[in-house]
Image (cartoon, rainbow, N blue to C red; front, side, top):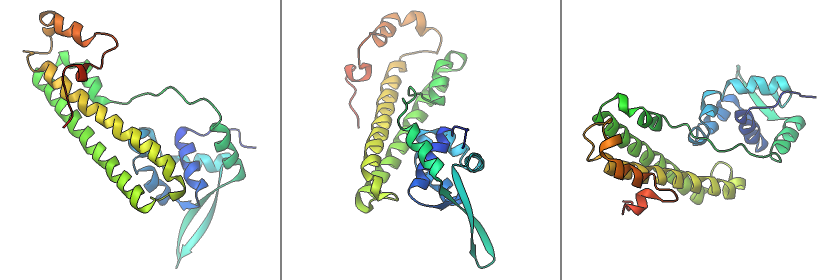
Length: 216
């Protein structure tokens, strides 16, 4: 019996194989379609995970040939299907966020005000691009059923969240740009803009909406 619990990337891979057998390339391609924005480590480990799943007995392999050229095809085993189903009964981890732009914001007192403003502008641009990416996914799934038409209702739930997530980042970046507009640098506002800082920290507020911000 397998005794190694898959990683989240592993479970994603098992979920893809639950819909049908695939090659390593096909699996990597599927993991790269929007999954990297949801679970970044999936994109980094999408090839290495297959060996671990095979070693643990969660996937089986076979060779298919096109002429003399062979490729490995992966399929879900009974143990893999059982592990995936068991994992879905367990509590999900608390959501986390991998956000380099926000780390840069936190450390902006070590740089210039122009650096901070550039980070905010780039954050907005990146969020707009990713929002457009998921809007295209939504249109594709809506019109064609997508790659997994039997899961289109589940993709609709996730896709709506991702669009809302990037809407939130765009709104925050717009608001943050307004807040720092009057800052002469990234250090002195801690004392020269105390009232503004207290207003930003007011509990229970949707600060950028309260400031009168509206989306484009």
